[in-house]
Length: 397
Figure 1: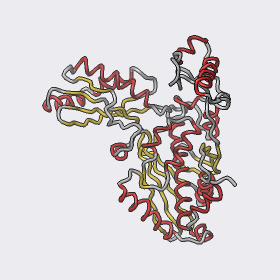
Figure 2: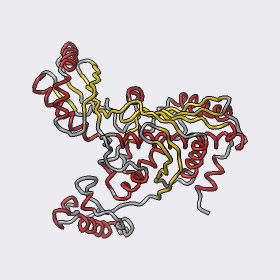
Figure 3: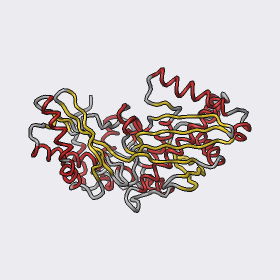
Figure 4: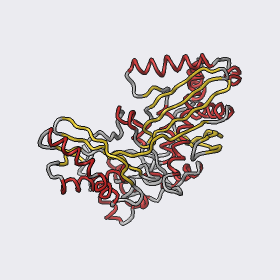
């Protein structure tokens, strides 16, 4: 039982400096727990720049090793060239695996990438007196879209309300509001804009009572079907054709790799009722998210997706489909010093010109990197070298 603690959240006000407040918190925690926090206190971050923006009750920072894969040839509408991609991870063998996949993809002419959809969603839920009123409300929303759009866009410089997707259950209505959010991932932008929409509805359709500004049809930080089908953030597809000669040098065929993908990623995932019909999207997405200051909890939906393969005469066709890749190059943790450098390494730090182009370029690079990671893991499984690779690279000698 700890003694009565001071109000740790008031230390910034007491000391007038976030760095001093963090030091005082560490000293207090060391005293009451007996645990030394020397390394957590070592950081290049000026904590005054993150308190009130990125964190509260700050005591320091943690460090995660960062590796790089590449060069990876990406052939997208916004990312076009060779890239060195930073991955922050503590899993031995991951960087080596993705790096070998990047080599195979690049040698085969690169990854072709397309962003199919771009829109961040927030879905407030409203209560109506009856089903009849709920249907009337949905019709009213469609008729007054321009007014709702004006209310939403009064809160943001770059955000634009693109569409409203209504869902009715009994006398409740979810309005899935989809926004263009520029180079920001956009969850906060969409939330603030949706609040303005809810206020307009309250004033002009008072029978609709707001229950919750987020009604879980968005869907944020949860595996789900609606984002898989309708998309949230960027919906991206990347593809490559790995040369037959490349596979022959490894002692395998396109049919071997396709067989692994079919049985593991498709049938195995179907048997498990998984939202990820893939080998390890989350590995690559999480490592890039950590390195570049993305919202790491959004790895949940950002790593949903499908890996497709097809044996061809000239080699192996492989593609990855990421329906809900939620990334940005401004806002959140993207302005932290090391994360900003990682984004700069990719040529996507800060806002794009025009707005939104840096985030689209970044999404294309992420998808191409996921493709490289999927390709190599499928090859490793086809060659039965997964365990040996982890034993060699993932265990300290």
